Amino acid sequence: MVDQLTITERDLRTMLDVVDQGRNADPEELFPRDLLRGLADLVPAEYISYQVSRPLDHEFIGLELVGDDPHDLEDGWEDLFWRSYWEGETCCRPQLTGDYDTVWRVSDYLTERQMADTIVGEWCRLTGVRHEVAVPLPVRGAEDRRLLLFRTSGCDFTERERLLLTMLRPHFIEVLRAHERRRAGVPDLTTRQLQLLRLVADGHSNTQIAHRLFVAEGTVRKHLENIYERLGVTSRTAAVATAFSRTHSA
Image: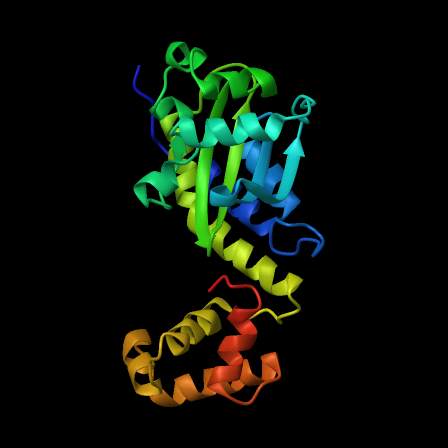
């Protein structure tokens, strides 16, 4: 049976609510937990996690998780996890393909029957996971960042749910960047100010920025003045360094 990919007005309103719930998160959180909770209402899952790791070093950096806690793991679980990560060729999909944009499911690569006899299946049996979908986020150096949704029973994630996650992904990225700036003590900038400042970071002049944004050069100067005031700086270089360098999330 082919999944219905229709997105309703209710879906769109819920998507906006999900994003809004991540706007004012506690700086102590690695990723906005309210956003993760809201996401579970849109794409049902027993638990959802934001995970930061260094796959080449077999090292976890951080984890933010909401929902029912997964099974308690026995000592030595890290070795099994990293074996399943690399040998299973599903978790390491971004590293193997260079594609850090596409939302994917484990079932895109392995059926339940095939998975049963693999290292991935062994890991899933240990954790009680039956279905998983991953939303990759932009890497930061050697750090891999992703959202993971897990189901321990029932049906696999559908193509429609994958589409919803794909549509939300750019908003997850912007929410994460804003959250990281707040955690680093960088004042919030508007979407337009950030867009302009990224062009500054890429080396564009005021004239070039004006052409790209279809505004007058004087408008660019005014935006920069407002950015300087908000960030407490007096130059383009300092503005870029303050807004981006602390979080490495430009």
